[in-house]
Length: 116
Length: 112
Image 1 (tube, chains in turn red, yellow):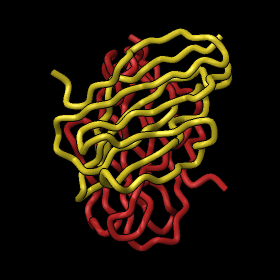
Image 2 (tube, chains in turn red, brown):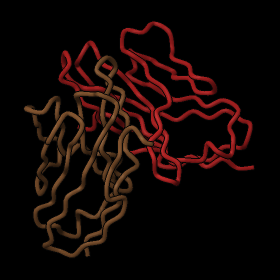
Image 3 (tube, helix red, strand yellow):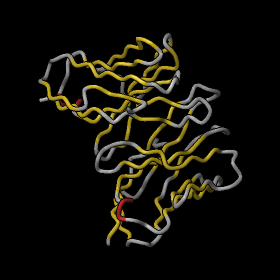
Image 4 (tube, chains in turn cyan, green):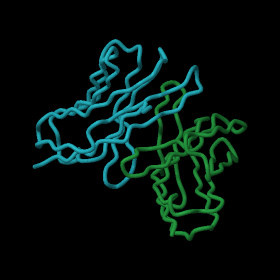
């Protein structure tokens, strides 16, 4: 079974509007972490935001926020005031593993296109 | 200079050839990883290493081997390349506290 699910292969958003990229996860661990990465067309992987499972508040980093709903096992990325440079692939990932023996599992990604 | 450096950045090879992708890092992290990216499949873990003496298989290790020559160096080998190993390969290191991955720029491999 997929541990990280991104159900939106592609999305469009108008410049300056907000957009939500969906991510659901599956784990029986109590301690885990959730990440979002951006991959522009140039190919590099850029870290955006992190949410720990015990963090009570949703993580925010500038225009990025993570809507963490633990009971629903969702960790959606919200991008406010979209810019043309936000056009990219976005990957959700989960840190899996006990203690320090962890690794990151990735979803299949969502391609976001920002329209001018 | 990049904290995580991969060589080569691009490589075209033929079926049956041996290929090595090299990765070096200056972040001082113990943990290093090799991922493969295919369109529509995201990133899949090939191998990972928590220190020089600790090597672990990921979900798609068949057809690959690795060597952790030093804390800063982790290389991926394809002993006999096949066309379905055509992909973008990423090396990464991770922060011990959160698990955040720091990626290299990627190595695009084409097997003809």
